[in-house]
Image 1 (spheres, rainbow, N blue to C red):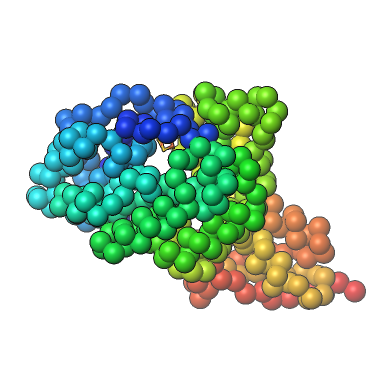
Image 2: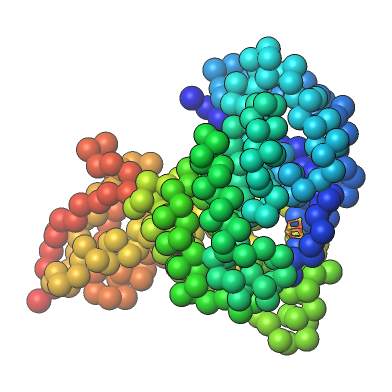
Length: 336
Ligand code: SF4
């Protein structure tokens, strides 16, 4: 079934922190707090747009939803009730929040108002990285909140960042391992993008910090993506959405409109190279699922060119007999 997300951004409100990377105005694209009427308008617009035979979910993103003033939070949830009761929001409500603003009381309340999925901005499971980046919570807060969310029967989402100040590939891989142990339903991976008017922006401009570049971020995010996929955890986002506000405030980091495709291409390259390992140099035919030909080939045929540099002249073809993420290799001619 098609999935439709009706996104309502709730920027920064109620958040007592100032995380090193956060410029909510740029990330959410707006400074105005949404009113209950904005929730109704968003549902009405989606309703008129036609969402037949789709799972429709209202998503409160962009801030620390359970940290905002309780009366205001409830007023936003109440505005959605008509659409939950009439069946339009058949996917319920999705929220994202901080791990230190989750407890039994708030989870009972969210359940009552039709919230089905809760995403936690964990960012890292390394306490020193969390402290350096002024997250204001610990890895243990993430573990406790994640377990509580699952105990209450919600869908659990976990969000992580790579390339934060003081972070390296090892702690990102460890974060992914900890996530896998917490058994989330979904994960989002965000390579750090340094924005103006943030602590990381200051550190970047003073030369104290530089985020990994696009190529480094793709290498790491591909490894993480593969780890989650091998554990049947759905990665629902890699990289920030393309937004003019982010582009305006951008200073450095891996910001690319097709970041996920780049990571998936990298995964295919690794799979192809591993399948060719030990085989004689020569021409090969690589067969993948028809919908994955462009990923296997890579952007601008990058994977084919990289394999050719190693002595493997490869042609990629599609076959419905091959499942997505899988491939077969057949030698055409050997080099002597
Ligand atoms: S907790 Fe969320 S909203 Fe608050 S400063 Fe950090 S990233 Fe921004």
